[in-house]
Image (cartoon, rainbow, N blue to C red):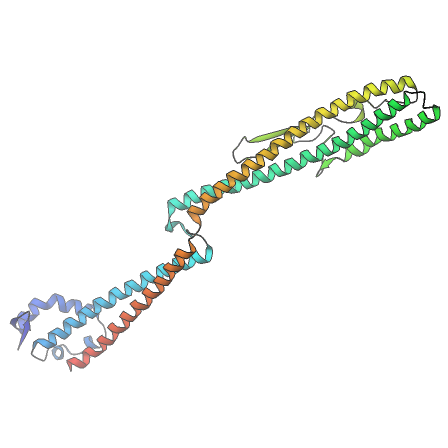
Length: 332
């Protein structure tokens, strides 16, 4: 008994000695019908064709193994692309890009911090507007009291007129103390009595940017009740008292103007801060998008490519399986 191998005529012993590695690989790879054949049956025939059948079966196993690996790769690629399309994110787990994920996470933290700071600035602006609104109302009251004092300083007003003017002055002084000062609040915090802020000293602090120490303050430590303004004793019942009241009102109007100047400057600063934060956040969000947002068009193309590749690899496996099924028939 002999075998033809690469143009050489080998006896059975020589054939086994030369082909032991190939045959060992063959039987290690396949555990199907061929290995169930009696060993003598496999080599019971002389001629090169039977050896070619064995080598062909080994080659088919290599094709099948390669195709299986390709299927796994295409499935992994398909899953990754599908996940990116579904989430809209380029990186869904650290293994897909640790450095990019770290940079994206840092930028995302900055973006969210800026968003919170901008919200703080908007609330601070609202607080300033509330305080300024209260001061504006107090100023209107004091201006009206001065107007009455000016009228009462003239003899065109008689005692009856001055009595009516005095009643209105008292009502407006009460409005300043009981309505404007006590009810001008932001939430539950009163703004015009000098007791607001964490330290209850009338100084309000606002974190308006993303870094520690980015604090803006609004000083409302001055009180705006009639006693502090110096008009609590204003009277217009006589020309002398009315003249005094005019001077007191001028002083009070000056104090209120100082308060409004402070709130006005603060509000202007908050408006600028909000604009700056909006620009910063837009730039940071664009940077986050570069690192984290998926390119949907690119991922859709990759998904289609992976699906096609997987189908082709499956077809190769099917072809290899069909070829293997023909081997036992050829050996019979």
